[in-house]
Amino acid sequence: MSIAIAVSAQGYGDEPAFDYRAEMTGHTIIKPSTGQEFLEMLADLTKTRGPIFLMKVFSHSYPRGIIMSNWSGFYDEPGPQDTKKAAYLSDLADRIQKGIIRFTPDSQILLFGCDLGTFSRKLSAVTGGTVVGSDGGTYPEIWGNRETGVFLTTDSWLVFKNGSLAYSAGKRYRAW
Image (cartoon, rainbow, N blue to C red):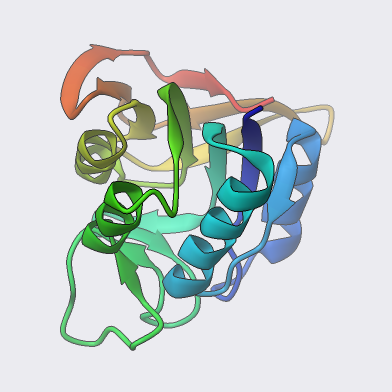
């Protein structure tokens, strides 16, 4: 038994759009407002539903990581204005090592936020799986006043496996 998760990051704006995108995936939805809450939700799902094989994250972001409530997101490393509710890749690594959060060996994490190329590489090294993120700005493709499920980037969608760049997936990537 394993689980597919869609994350709608809360607390920094555009929540209805992130909620819609998470719903469109058909996966189990979580809506964390802080990095610590995010890790707690992953731990609870791992305990009750098994390891994570697929996770799609819809969020605002910047090179440090996923933005949630002010300075309380999920980041690569601590920053000077972070609150105690922020969480870091080292916190995730600790929970993985202890078996509190589990990923399948072939897990995939898709990050639909801006400027997450370096963060994606680091996250891939922590999870040991595949992580896809954009090195530039991202936005949904719109046709007929509807999102198509494809996200575009101003740079490239980068695919990392075990912390190393595997390939560039181009300028379009399907979320659902």
